[in-house]
Image (cartoon, rainbow, N blue to C red):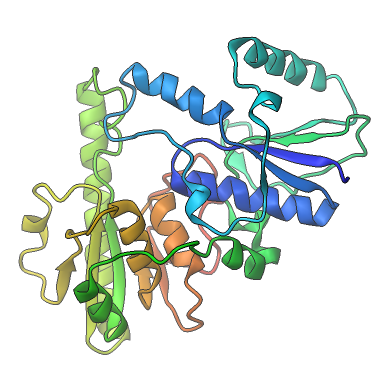
Length: 314
């Protein structure tokens, strides 16, 4: 049996996908068997959630809807318990002293921001390797794009609103998205003026980006139809009341997250919102003629290489 490459899954769907894609690619390149730790990181997120750190986030493993080829690591082999959590910290501390590393982390610059850096694996004296982080950059896995598309295909048919589906595939559809409560969703017991102002500033930039994108597509493609997705439509429709050909995708059958993700992924073009969720729906779309716009002045990630180089800044 080959050595294991173990990745610690955490956070929401988009970040889980980034980490999986990076780990999958690294395992393929280095001839490791990929295993997922689906407990340690998620349980840590659950503990944070108990402290009311998030308002709209229910931590869970979300990749089980896809046709993944990776194995799930035995629960007792993970760093799940408090004792094992301490053991992991000790392992990481000792690993810093080793030439042959057992833990692979993202690189940071002097400003404490992550950036793309090709993972380097030295031959380790340890049987298993661990990769932790989010690695929010396509350069980590772009060489295996065709594989990643297969890995992130849905296991089962998604139930969705047929009206939205037909409108999307029968038009020059453009996927738009608006992320609400960017800063006020966190620390819900501490809605400071600073966080409220940051959220307002983020919302204003998003709105400006969407309007600029709509004007761009009106000039570039014939009869565009705009499909706006959001996690919260409260007071949102009034912002776009004077814009024709915009459809608010707000009616779902059973699972809004999966239905939104599927409908996003079949649109023909994108004005990619500053979210990893919308990022992935655009990236997975295999239309060779798609146009992807992205905000010139918003990066939702701590990784400075979050946006693909070939997406148009506006």
